[in-house]
Structure formats: structure tokens, C-alpha cells
Length: 242
Image (cartoon, rainbow, N blue to C red; front, side, top):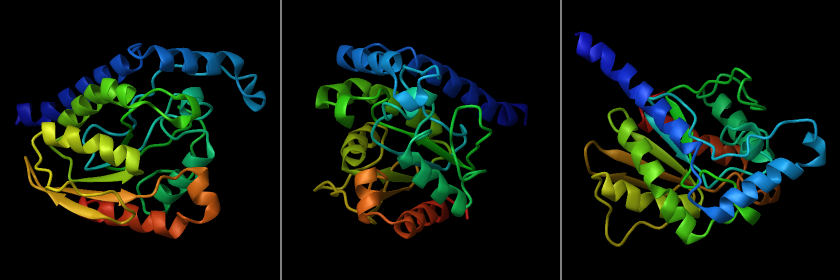
């Protein structure tokens, strides 16, 4: 009984160590230079703020049943605040939707210490540093891959569903899942909004595609709040959170 009670705590401690290690990474010179340049020059609206200016770790509980996989931190969002999707317009859309479906404690996310918590859900990305023009290179994606692999390994005992925001995250995630023991169908499933795939492996894993919450998608109506809520609600249900 004691071992059962301690295992989740130990996993949480290991995940916290992983997050700390992520935040110290300097493996990609181009990304290091860019994230630190942005943190020094800042945007005028945030001139009085101290930017995070480091890799941004995942956010959410160690016993998450649902994981959201994005692309990379925004230069003046996560790279400023130190938390995924926090402090930018993409995050405004995402956290409102998470709140609407019962997965977030509040509808807004402005900084790391704003009291926001996620219920049974963790947010991460295949690239942890803000890239120039929001476009990591394939080499940078592959260099960062081991962080995502380690994170999913720690979440594996409770992980039941993954919502992938955008084609970049989808393409980056599939090899990681294969290495972690899940069977990827052949031909590999293609990304698309509302695409749903169930993978066999350590336990069945439900994979759902969703257009990214970029301003380009949300401003043009390619991704509406209703579409986003629908996918998140389905992911929550498949993960046993609703």
C-alpha cells in the first residue's frame, strides 16, 4: 500500500526534475541565440517585464490522462512567461476552450504564477525553445525529441489520449510514440482536423488531430472556438476525464 501511494509522488518528482533539465538546455545554437535576443530586446508592450528567455517545459500534472502537443513556445508568449501557451493570443483561445470543457481552472493564462491549474491534462511541445518565425528546423525538432520521449515515458501509466495541435506536432509525435512502444499503422496516419486514431501498445492510446490555435487559423475561422471545444471534449472523454 505504501509503495502504491508513493509511486505517483515519485513520478511527479521525476517529472519536476525533467522540467528543470529542459529549462537548462542549450543544445541548439540558433534557438539559444534567438530566445535570448528576444528576451533582451523585448516587445514594447512588455518592456518592463523580465522575460523567461529559456526553454519552456511542459505544464500540467504528472498523472495526466490527456496530453496536448503543440509546436513550440511563442517568442513573446511562452518565451516571456515561462509557461506553454501563456501570455499570447493563441493561449487566450486555447485556455478559454480548456476552461469551457472543464479542463482548466480559469479561462485566462497570463503568467506562471496566476494560479491556473489543469485537470488531468498536460500541455507540451516537440520543440521547447521559441524559434525564429515560429519555424523550427527538422534538425532542431530531432535534437529536442528526447525531451518529449522522456516526458511521455513518465506519463505513460496514466496517459490515455493525445490531442495534437497542428501538422508539425503530429509528424514529430509519431516517431516518439513508436519508440515508446505504441504501434503506428502503415501507412502512417495523416494529420487532419478531427482525425482520430487508436494506437495499440502498453495501453490503447487515442490520438486526435486539431488545427493549431495560431492566429492565422483562429482569425480566418479555419479553427473556430466550437471546433476546438469539440476536439478537446472528445479527447477528455476518451481519456476518462468527462
